[in-house]
Amino acid sequence: QVQLVESGGGLVQPGGSLRLSCAASGFTFANTQIGWFRQAPGKEHEGIACIGRMFGGVLYADTVKGRFTISRDDGKKMLYLPMNNLKPEDTAVYYCATIRVWNGRSCSSVGYWGQGTQVTVAS
Image (cartoon, rainbow, N blue to C red):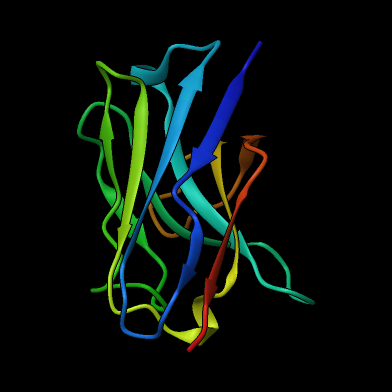
């Protein structure tokens, strides 16, 4: 079955960095569009970074553009999200998720979700 397992979350001070990882299994990773989503307390899910299959491009939400970088390793079936210059408003549960339809404009149309990893940015 499809499994997406996130890791790398934690507590970090404002201005700090974290690197999230997502280990995928149960599907053909190289043929799958995939991305990172987050949900802050009391807010809806936000698609923040996603990457197409086979060099199909990347998309970022304006809230993270220039600070977060999405990448994938198809051989290892891994998705990564190094996050720099973290802000308190980045505090959320971060999810790795597959994307069913690539629209070229935003990260949406989620297929499968991981279980999430908590990121807390506080001094």
